[in-house]
Image (tube, rainbow, N blue to C red):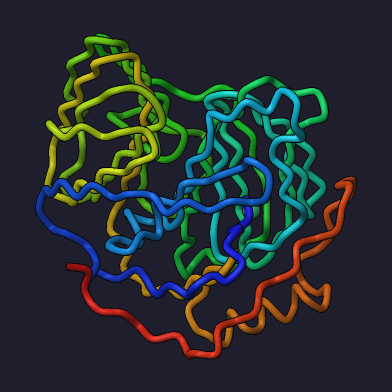
Length: 321
Ligand code: MN
């Protein structure tokens, strides 16, 4: 998905100064953004008080939306650099096209993983014939300096490993959870897992103390480390945990996001992750001139135009809280 914000604010993130070394319970509220019609996304990262969780640098939650009589998701071709995109669905389907020639329908609990490397462009749309409901999350993972100029590629993994406990099925979509490893290519120590909880579940999920973690609620009533987390909210958990208590009052769907704190400082703007303002300016110019990012074929519509860059230069921000 593209950053739908028409006047995106640059965000400087990464680095140890942003990481909370001990367990905390910081409830993050979403910022609501609309793309015309009825499509609304709830942005959890970057957030006013928190920009990254490990290498996870962007989290949008959308739906469930009834799109039976609507076109649904229609995100025209747009560029990315310096990141991976993760498409994760609970309901519906998304048709992915990209400049490496990929054409892939992504269905619930299948991983759509796009590594932009130095440059890629893609589109995402609801297929013409689609399910009534659309519900999912779009996430970005920052690439470390050693891999951010890699070749662009797209992976689709329909068969992902799971970790089971009474009342819990955890599907490992990226990285590693309790010894189960996703087939998706990861470039930093990371975990992304879908947690399907049955009503009445009361479990403890094993965690790594040197990772920082957060939990996104997508549906249901759930307590995460004793904190009620409503759908569309994200609880930041800090580092220093060996387990996470989860209790479900109803069937519930969560995403666990974690990773080793991301040491490198980043500059994020629109759909780009770089290290300097000059890189971001160059990427914007290249996209505008039709250079570098390739071409998406088959999408019925014009590519997205890059928003204007703000005139204020990017300045690193200090420690969060
Ligand atoms: Mn995108």
